[in-house]
Image 1 (cartoon, rainbow, N blue to C red):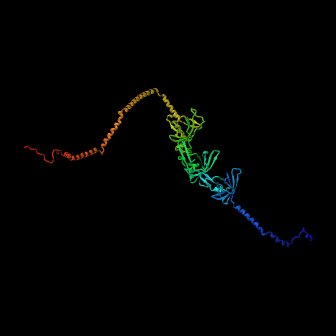
Image 2 (tube, rainbow, N blue to C red):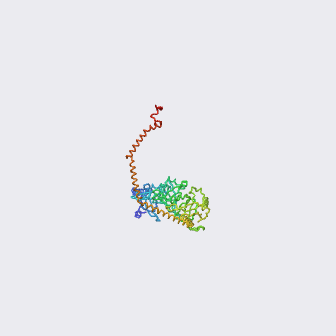
Image 3 (spheres, rainbow, N blue to C red):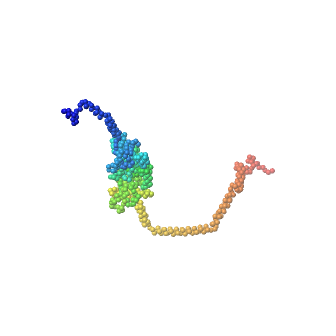
Length: 562
């Protein structure tokens, strides 16, 4: 290449080694330490981001029916009054049935987020147990966390509007109660035993398919040992007032039950306690204590009373008694009223279903032979056993079924059935019995011979009239006697005689002179008697003393006269 070409601007000359050595310092200036500062800042920022992410706790999702009092960025999550998280967002659920809450938890709370952890909203609340949550009036509501004991982690939870009855892991016994709708309980109602609070109602759900209430209760330890397989549960309303055939009864529970109701339990006196109840065992919830006690007698004989009298005052649950001892219960009044009645009956009867419960006589369920008892009652029917309705209380007018043996009806039993149930023979009572007695009395009066009775009655009336005439004349004589002036003067004469007698008695008083003279005379007579006592004694000893001066002289010798 020529020198001209080398000098052409489009063809610069190739740098020499010397030129390259001269250009090296320019490249070292581009890698100046100043560029290290942004790089270090970038590393620090990345570290801070990582540290912030690593130091953050887990995020959880909470489901609430309502976000009342909950605010994003303000509402805290606490456990034992220590902050462990904060609500970051609040939004409606996709189906608009509730609220979805996102909360950022502290790292220390991660081990508490297990499947049995409970959350509930703490806010001012007034209930049967008193006033709670007053501290949130100024600070606002917060979400309380109660750690669970499970080992399975969870990140989604349901938040309750009420605090749990018992914390997770609490020692005690959880049971299931099934009842009718009328015996339903509310969450938080007390469970008592003989007036002592031993637990609470945790859940209350209505089963649409069976139309019954299902309750879940928790009984604290050590009271859980009181529940056995034969325990009965019944609802309490605080005060129970009942009018029945047994009279007037009033029963009062605890003050808490009086204000809010609840449930109590016990074992009937005539039933063995049995072994302790198992966890999650199911029991029936009865309406009251009497219904729970009646539920013990689960083996019985059913009979139908075809009553031709009125059943007004007879109700379900009325007792069936034999000589004052209860042996059964009225099950239904009336029962299957539209069923056809036996052909041999002319009158329309009211069917009443009763139950004969031999267990009331102290017979155990395992020892009870129902067939033997049915045969026994058949023999009693032949002997004249009949059922009647009697009044158990004059105050309420309630009736009960009384069983008695009428010897006059022996051998007159005719077996009958009604709606596939044997018929219990009955006898008239009440108004029908009174009507029969009045009819019998009228029949006897009709058979009486009235004419002889009327003739005798006429004679008696004539004699009575004569006696009245004599009595009238006697009264007139007495009136004339009383009207006589001499008879009227008798009271004055009698009064004067009494005055004179009083004066005579006053003269014989100790202060009168006659009384004093008489006293002196008696004293003189007494002295005279004392003086005469020696002479009388001497004469008594020797009667000669009356003739001679002395009894010691010799007898005189008579002499002839000179």
